[in-house]
Image (cartoon, rainbow, N blue to C red; front, side, top):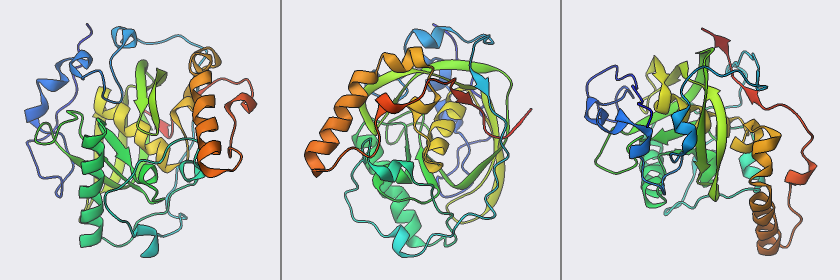
Length: 276
């Protein structure tokens, strides 16, 4: 079993202060295999491959600017509890999210509600689009259990740098229940974001925390985890994706807004901002 020496950069802090990782989570981070099997980003044979990759995966360099993003209105942040997970192929998952400009009690309540549904559905990360809100908010806790690890809230995040080293991992997603497949991503990222109070900060994440962040960040951009899979890997879950498309059609009486069978052959993209 490969060892995950995740970077713990600060002592424990409340989720409503600087969102860094708690030293209480050290034992959890000792290995990917300690994630329970039902948790998103579950462990598999991919966890044993931690060395640098030589693969056909393309590293795409793209500077991401949030300055021109549309600001979320009060109505964009309205929600009712309990929140419900939005499943593929709902078009909400493809919409680009709006930047949050108001940091108030409603935003804190939304973050709380997102943690609640994340824990109840055995997740370790959740983005606002996955509960029907296209705003730039994500929550995660690599421990996957309330009262364990450290709860992280990131608002309006952006990626400044990502590592050259790429690593595979068997990912799952709450919006794709029961579906798991290998995704290759940069091992570490440096990000800028705001905390739940609106305070700006920068932080570097590595290994599992970086993996979770990148997955949830993709959701804010309307990117889904199978978009980053090679065709060979995608073929292993194609029937399951088609089953979700059929489920959507039967539930809504409408054609699926997208079809995995229409995806063109391509290399999956990895990377977001400047390399470091």
